Image: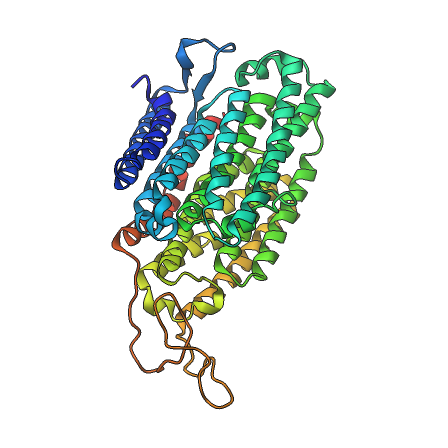
Length: 513
């Protein structure tokens, strides 16, 4: 049990190595190795969370070297929760993705599982580490893995989207590393707790200010905060759906966790909100991000790209809440890390089912989907209601905290943006519901001579061709493994919503105290 904190990270790392080597023996072993590795990591994460709740933070010295000279994993209530989110979602997604990985990557399944485990290893390490430079290394492990994954996606657009992601990602990592360099110049240490102690007497230093700004800009690029979001829509839209379902819920949320970790643990509230005076400007930027994401989502004709811009919108929620400067705002931001990870995972599980059966998820091609995929659409509807903020789904409660924080702060523009974005999300999703509810028109695609320009409706073509409006709709659901995971995650949105008060009182408020 003493080694659970490091096993959370090491087990997926070993699984990545073995999954890659297994290709030379038996390709089917790669999936089993990856699944077992992530399942063990999830068990360790849950055990660590229970231990932290019961006994307080855990400090794990890597190789026995004491901090600040050695690397330390320091796990408290905040990152214990994040570790459970990351490992749990990654494991469940792997269960749901067996069929789609085979469909999308063909003879590269072993490489996919190996890179997938490496990506999750990076996220888990980022969440657990208490060392600023080790954090940079783990962010780069995560980023390099995600570049490769995006390139494995759409054959025409995936490589270009990956290249753009590489350029922007390297810039973001460079900003963060430069910031860490400035902090090291001032403190001579890289351990977060040690740096925080030394910085307490250097709040007026221009070196510290430069390091803080560089670190924040680097993280904002990595989390795709407007206007530094340009890499996200294409990277998410053209990546393999099995990877999309894990990167969309986790990548930006873990980067937001890192931002909150630096704000609270390294620099401290006093420095950010009393010494510095640009928290109001960040809240305004977050407000613009919320509105921009919503408006851009309205303009999209593809479901994946529409959801990508909704993620840009959600990032604004969490950044604005964290920089609000009051307990309600930080509570709402941290709770929304959990809620947004779950509801984004749920909605992309449903989208993944659609892609598996019909390939194309342009909005015009989704007609009749309620009849063809009723169970998938049920999960999609629950996830959509949570993103909109309909009680008792979890999305409502974190939005409520954020709105209350905005009123307490007097940031009425932020509260208005939250309400407007919820209305925009309602318009977006009800437009999708309308398209999916009605079957394709029998006159769709007919020429002036009354003949259809399209052939018969075949597998992989949804909503095209001539059909009889009175004929029964044939059900074409996704495999059972996909439906079970989608159903469980969708139901969890309601369960987490009902227990939001318990989560806040057990994890978030004790951490903030």
